[in-house]
Image 1: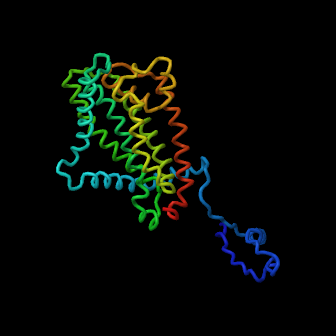
Image 2: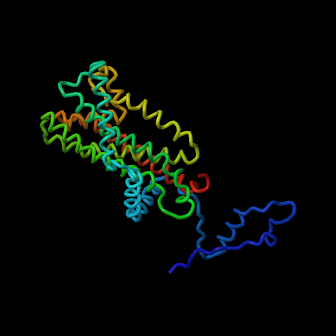
Image 3: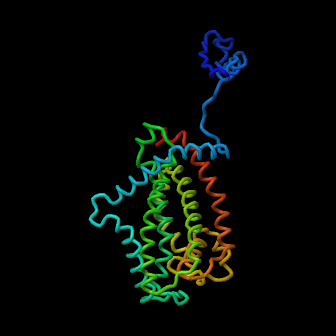
Length: 313
């Protein structure tokens, strides 16, 4: 059995380098101690930006899955605490936005929807968008809102932003029942293509997690991120097909437009659920590829910044 790492106490006065004219070189002294000892010396440092950091972090996150569940329930309870309408707010927000956009884009101006009633057309776009924007806007500020958790106990820090993602997904599921009621009201047929919405939502959740982890880590050092995020999301909403159709985008710009995974995912969700048609699987493949790249990068960046969060928060 290998012996445990040895902690070596070095007396500066007894080292050859410790005279009045030569500075004390701690790295050199530790190196000599390591070579003269049979026991290994482990140097503790922040995790590196690597694949090993990702695998180690995921194993640790799995061990703390119960804490992720507990914090997600806590998010939902706090959000609707002392609220007369309670969980109904998860459906009121998209319904209110649907009513406003319906008035504007049917009375003031017209938007081509391919024969689909505009209320259900815009509601099917609002559902994935609110899931995405709600996850990011809350998760980015999550770490700085609970500094005591970071400074007084250890747990995988990514649990905090991911708990906001789980809470937003719960709101998404509640609001989806309203979409089902609207489809029944407008007699929209339900086809097997609706099953494609499941992988679309999973890809959307992955991209939301990538953005949330990356910017929540930056927010710990630079609070400008949290101040700018609501403004960025407001602009972002009108660059994706939420209130208008993808057909409104000029053909020559459409390929560049669909490089934004949110645009492709919202359009694919709408076509699969209320359009009764298969989504463009080439576009979905591009979205999945973007998430496959951004999610590991965002997670690795978050884990590499985790060790110093308590010091700067």
